[in-house]
Length: 273
View 1 (cartoon, rainbow, N blue to C red):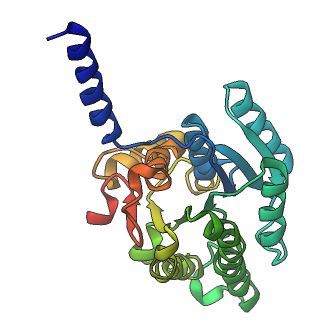
View 2 (cartoon, rainbow, N blue to C red; view 1 turned 180 degrees about the vertical axis):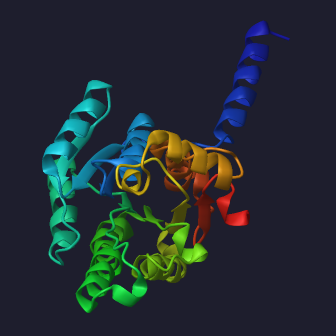
């Protein structure tokens, strides 16, 4: 047989095998990540950018978002910063419109931003409870409404909601927050069923104890934080924002195209302890 034919056949087989491999790339896609100037939102934004996704960093602190967007750009990614205040109902449409205006399209929505009151449930005011519901449930629903207007025509889209270990642990000082995160679980399942015919997946990531700027207020020192990881987390350490990045890439890319309506705990085993 002609050696050239053997080489050609080998290439065909190699290409066929490669086509069957999971595709974690997001080249040509665009994501809006709320609350992504810091913490887990930023970790997810960096991870998506690393696989070719253009990212819109939405944060109430626009200066911080701009700094982080510049860092992503300096590393070869595509990123913009937009202001996003989830305490304002109008912010949902504003964030989606700004993303599409500056990046040309929208393929992925990550509902990460949230507010929380750490006052004991017996002392939380009606205003505090309502503020958490508005920011953590109402605005994410409105963001989904705006996003699917872009997802449906292209028959492709990803909605990734960010829950919390608190939705199953039950913290009396975070009752309102925990309830809103439980509501995201219900929302995720409902939207997954409704949007599946349009090839739009909807999933929920629930982080455990993470080293983020907000959680640092709960610990007196880094040593105390590390000790809590050793004492309470089965894997033995507190999570880093980037630890949610791999899960986000899986669920947002075509590698995870057959996963929808699911809850994934990224918590070092805390949820099964």
